[in-house]
Image (spheres, rainbow, N blue to C red):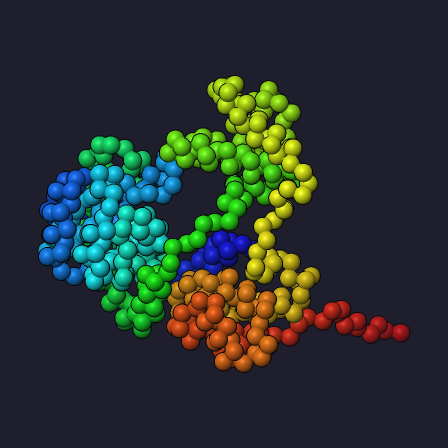
Length: 434
């Protein structure tokens, strides 16, 4: 089972049911309190925002809009902020690509973001890096909310509805349409109010210290390293089995990525993942054969077809020693589905550990992956401490990056799970009747 499948399964099994709607209907949030602010796109306007937010007080609501699916990469195309005493601000990072001065002014403030891990990379690119933060999505998970999208959280916690019709638009569009700016301003309008309500809820449940540890870990985390062999994430890659076909995927993906980066467009707009996989499976002999495949239809010009066929030919010409392996080498345990054959004792430990962690997560009303990541559970069960005491398990969990609250909740349970007896190599034969 993959991490995504484990997460989905855990969420489905553990998400608490929604409370029946017996209260008043949610109120549509139609306008920002001070109206939609003008978009700041020059140094003079940015200086005014910096001065206003430096004079403000309390937490700062922060959001960013990207152009996923339209542009290459994940850069920010609009940054929204709100702070008590400063109001709201909309900043265009195209006109103001360096926001480090604003980031410095807000360095001592707590930043409030929803799903912080999504926005922090693009904010870091423009010089905005928080020292302290409050993630309202993660807070919602820890508090036991079944639906943790911003709209659902604002509705269920604060009783307002947000208009979410522009979440997937092309935010690189200039000028940005007024309805989009209206939507963007409303995204930070109630973020601090949501933060305050969730903090009170977590405090009532005794989970606020847990949340603070999580937020500290997010703020302290370094930028993610570049992904190794990113072409292996091509959708449909599981259909490609032979190493030379895998090489075709790699060559086509790399050629596509260069074009997408040069044009500043989403790679999928240059060539779809499905087309790459079709070409890898078919191994076309020439551009004409390539043109008959899905994704390389009549709309594609001869020059483009020749370009893609050249990538196929490069893969065909590679010596055997240069072909990619069928799977990426990892330093982690093998897929759990193979454990029963490779190491029955480890499989037994994993089954016991999963069961224990899931049960504890249900008791605490939070998703299992937030109590302890599935990867940490797998690594611990595949290579347990040589001496399986609780102290050794605590040490192992710390080495895996678990937070102290997670260790407190799971160390004893996992110590017991690591002692799970291995299944017999052969089932005992019952004695037949004579």
